[in-house]
Image (cartoon, rainbow, N blue to C red):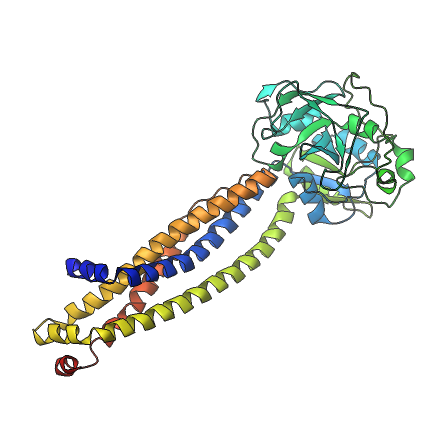
Length: 426
């Protein structure tokens, strides 16, 4: 029986190949959507788990999380530096690290922060040492700069016509170990160097711009207003590192906080959800984004299933026509005494083999497509997106196989509609 089926498929190999390709493409769409949605969800969750609590100026929770955790460019309002001082000296806080944005170099964002945050992200450096002076920098694992390289910061980005700062050139002293987050593509420098470079002088200076938004990732608003005529501050590159923050600390767009206990985390979030500040758990923000992503996934899967239904209907119609053209052959087999079940199995087996081959090829194509998409996203965001199958995917494959088995019966029984004598006369 199997030999007869395979011989018959070889006779009509071009039509069989077209059927397999159509099924494979429709299945690949569903597999790609399922795997990619899971990869984005797992990858972003792993990236956000390193950040327990974010505190920023009142505004959009989603934008605060995307900017501080995933380093996505966006204008964020500045928060009073006194908030950073209070968090840094709060006994409930294990780590309070400011982040300052606005500059870039070689296509990578330059982030002003502290050695404590770098140690939290990368407990041990992959290469070199931590920065200890204002003119030094530590690069993320994916930044293609070696130890000792010179970095000239640019205000904004090259794409937006940014201007290169002349007041400082950072020297790379170390490289972080891979973190699987967007910070693997970042250049980390002392936050005080960023403040001095952008001529930010603390509380009084910040009050002059109360209510204004920070440029890009948090650069001082008055620089944005002056276009390319930036008010470059003087930076003493050889000055020793000072990570003490007080009430006169300049404004910052966000502070990454690591509370000592879960209870402390909830208390701090509630305490800083005021009219001027915003405390958020990145994981909660991502949960809301996942809900939106889940809606998009449902829509794409519905489209994929609709496409599969159309493909299956077309294949069934073509198969029925193909069976009709073989009525004389089937009639001869019945006249020779071939059991009905054998004829049904023959026709059913041919179509089911085509479906099975298409499903297998579609799963492989969907997996490869998800790998390619994830690799491209990881290259631009540095967030690792793990692509893989789970136990739940067996239900998806089983569903495909069950539908294929049921659909294949239709042409099989259509072959028995006419008597052997009528089939031979046709």
